[in-house]
Image (cartoon, rainbow, N blue to C red; front, side, top):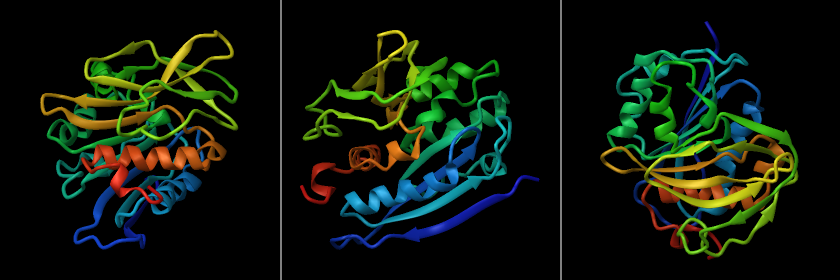
Length: 254
């Protein structure tokens, strides 16, 4: 059995009083990325940029495989009690229909989500793989070569992006977007050095009949990129928006 690390209720002290902390679940692990470090970067980003207190539960599947099934997801109530779920995982070779349906059900039922990088390449081998793409809001079949890229904001008036400026990543792995599903609002895009084409890499999505809020970005392969001040602020903004909280008034230094 693969080792699973669960760190429950990690509280971060933040400015301002808050009667009820935001309860966030981070699910991470799998192939191809430094999830040992990223499980620390993500809560730290919110601690740095948000006035709100957040209680984090971190579920880390310690494996480099692409086909692992998390026992946690097999529990029908796996997302119960959380205000928002962050998916930063990479399990591309999982195609089990019932398993994937069990992951999607809480989000169909209204639990907001934040999706990072390889989450868009997960669960894509089975007969219902398009169900996962609809949750992500996009179908991304592959990525291009690694190179820095400029993040060009295309929706500067959207609540998530308001006040932010274009920035350039120190490193990057640009995902190609083959299809965008209804309910998606593009927020930013970048150009592939290989093809010269622009690809959306930050967006928000209204998922399912309840229009569950989903914030997603394909940026996040390298730790150096995730540690950028712009990325850490972006993630915090996306988390607040997904959870249905006013973004500007809950950011530090606003």
